Structure formats: C-alpha cells, structure tokens
Amino acid sequence: MKYSSFNLNEQNQKIESRIVVSLERISEAFRVLLWNESKENSLSPIQIQILIFIYYHSLEKCKVGYLADEFNMTKATISDSVKVLLSKELVTKETDPIDTRSFSLSLTNEGKKIAKKASFFASSIEHPIEKLTQEQKAIMLNGLLKLIYDLNNSGIITIQRMCFTCSNYQIDNGVHYCKLLNSKLAENELRVDCPEHELRI
Ligand code: SF4
Image (cartoon, rainbow, N blue to C red; front, top):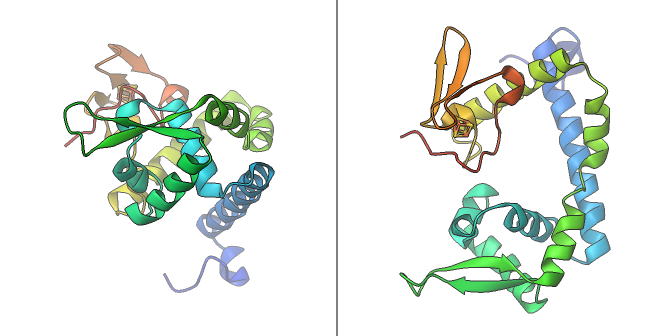
C-alpha cells in the first residue's frame, strides 16, 4: 500500500480507502455514544460494555479471561473494571463449583437496570440503517462479516461467534447452511453473535 487511506488524494481515487475512512467515522460515533452513556452512570466505557455483555451472554462466558479476549484488553485491565463494578454492587461473583479458584460474573438487580438501559446506546446508529433497502442491508451485513472474519484471522480482533467461524456452518455453491438449525441461512440471516456458536478448530 503506497498511500494512507487518510491521504485525501488517495482516498478520493480508491473506494477501499473511502470505506476505511467511513468505518473510522462510524467507530467515532460509537465512541461518543458509549462515552455519553458512561458519563450518565459515572462508569467508564469498558465498565458499561462489560455490564451489557453480561446482560446478554451465558454465565460461562462472563469470566475475566473471556472478557479480556472479547474486548481485546489485558486481564489486569478487565480485573480493575470488575473490581469497580463489584464495589458499586452492580455485579456479583458466582464461584465455579468444579474449580473454586474460578468465578463468573452475574448482574445484581441494579446492574441489570443499568445494563438494560445502556444496551440502547447505539440506537441512533441503527435508525439510519433501518432506512436502507433489504438488499442494501444484506450486502452491508455480508461485507462487514467478511471484514470481521479477515480481521479475526489476522489476529487483530480475537473472539468471534459468527457463522463463518462456526463448526455448524457450511457453504455450498454460495448457499449458506447451519447444521445445528438444520436450515439454509439467507444472506440477511447470517449471525454475528450466535448463542449456539461452536468454534471451528
Ligand atoms: S450455530 Fe449459529 S453461528 Fe453456527 S452456523 Fe448456526 S447460526 Fe451460524
């Protein structure tokens, strides 16, 4: 790559560069919205993200190590955030009955209340997407899934629970299929975070 995507001469010649810069603008919108939500609750953005993650995921995923991989952070950083959430009584520790040194996190009633409300922080990004045609949405979803898959393969982002990395996923002549659901998946049905995901080894 000769020029940066942020070099305007290059950017205006290449659609790839304009897509990269557009994604960067959208990531900025996420950052601002999450920051606003955090301020309202006197928590940091990562603390809000942890609460939302726990609210929507199973107990075995709500461990410090898993959260560190999920958010591409060190265990020490996640542990510091968890300490704050424990001290504010927004989460509690659930000790693993098999391995008593290990624990998962669950939300207290107050934690659930904050997580539920905070989980709408990105609604203003969803509204303009709703205005796209079904075809535009399917193309966008497919392109983004492929991008996430490649970033995952190159080790830039870690855990993924999408169809493309699942042992239940098959593709035959461009037709997507889920062995677990025993059903074809249309382009607009491909999942980005599936509770039944089983990592393909
Ligand atoms: S189990 Fe979920 S992630 Fe896996 S292929 Fe089926 S729908 Fe996709």
